[in-house]
Image (cartoon, rainbow, N blue to C red; front, side, top):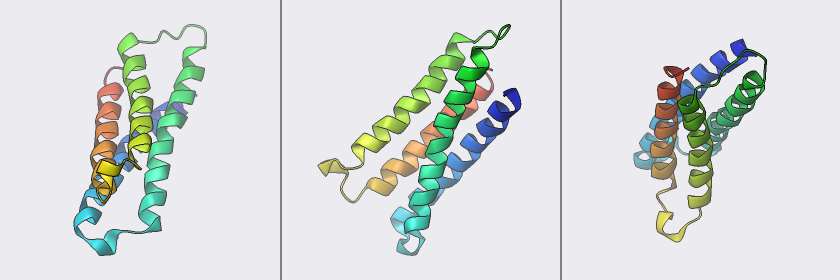
Length: 119
């Protein structure tokens, strides 16, 4: 379980970095938009939930002590994904969804990086 948690941490960071940059570029370059972009965003955001589940299972094992800040940053990533999802249909975000998910994905990446070094 620990190996899954570590591998998924790097996937979370890498995929959210990639999708964050892709979304921001796609805001400017129409040719970069499409279903593949949104599928990538879904996969990148899903890594947050895989990470949380693996972390919770790992924390429930005997002898594993969870750092409070590690749990806070992990929970914050879940909240961030929820906020991104809830704002996507807001009237003031119309036409700016790519910026929302670009910056949001980079924020989630940052939480992942920060959490990696709290571990």
